[in-house]
Image (cartoon, rainbow, N blue to C red; front, side, top):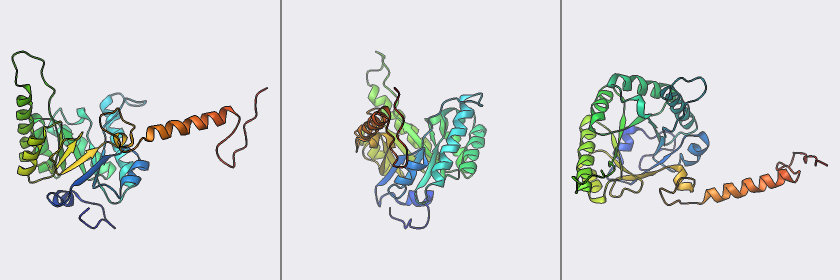
Length: 265
């Protein structure tokens, strides 16, 4: 990192200032364990929005918000250097700018994270502007739409590129402090990066950006194979669990202070 983060957390303003000086590094985390490990390595941590309905929650949105808050609080509480950004659940900001403000404010105030991330096209840009005007730092996520399988649109890639560029500029004009660019071709990503005054972060190997972000699962080889892993931790975990299971089935116990399990006759 460019700024001295030996005693303070990287702010949103400092993250923006890294543009054109040094490539920006981002990883995802939803737990204190992984967040603590990557804190001194990355510039920002994105707390993902994976959520399922759970006991005591009537709706997916309620559960998603609570889980986002819990995970972001765990990441913030276990780190002291990286900027922490909460990935807002899909349905938590789509209804109206007012709904987005209520939910984003709740996530920020209860977790202590530095900013939020919203995904969407031009339809979400007004919400981004509404939040920024009220003091909430927003990173926008621009994803190239999937090709349409229609005979009347032969130049699908050109249409997607045009839509992605329009979405990116809509968020920039709305005041987003950064852009996550996913699935964009290198020339388009480079052009947006060159023209934008804020950092662009490539997702899923999108080249030509000010930095790159991966999920911690993909880096460790625990993901679904969307990106080439930097380590095969899945094999290490599987082998360790197999050894543990074998010990248990043979009446042994891993900790040195644990007494062996009695064998059944």
